[in-house]
Image 1 (cartoon, rainbow, N blue to C red):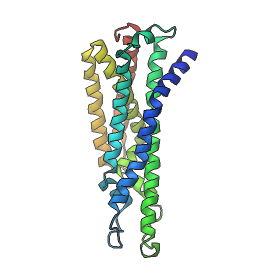
Image 2 (image 1 turned 180 degrees about the vertical axis):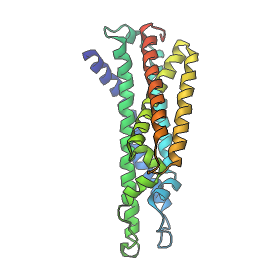
Image 3 (image 1 turned 120 degrees about the vertical axis):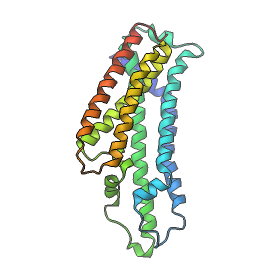
Length: 256
């Protein structure tokens, strides 16, 4: 375990500066977009819901860009081990189990992903405060909606994905996150080891995720989510396969 913690510290330290930059951008950028969207806001447009303003201002697209940037940066950190001094050979000769090498990078990516999601939730709350302050300044605040943020998380498809309000939704979000994290890493390892047939399983996981996201944006909070349990189980099984085969490739030294 000591080797794992040391590797985790090294991996996370190497990613921290870029991740902090992405997190700050995730928090600040939506506020700028919301502020621009609320120019000319008056008593005739004050009836708009927060989640509608948030979506129309482009904040969701901004988050997706930062999310994609984090995935690209993680891939860069993997391929950086094959450039220059080719440190991948050093990793594979360390006196630790190959599982520790694998899970250290995977854990670092998971922590970075959670930091980005936490930053997004902070951005949503700050954005709501910004919108509320603007609404409160119009006609002595009579248009301010009580519990507007809570209602936004119930009504918004995007916000329900980030912070589900049901167990099936929570399980679905967690399974999607695990499949994304393990799938991105597995794809890079398949490419490095020339096991291109592994991309079939990645495509299968993407198909399940797209189907689930489509279903979740169609259903309301009160709609039963029995299909989500099946999709979540499929994603977790695929994630387990990604982890198992990734470790197998590392143990065989096929990625060097």
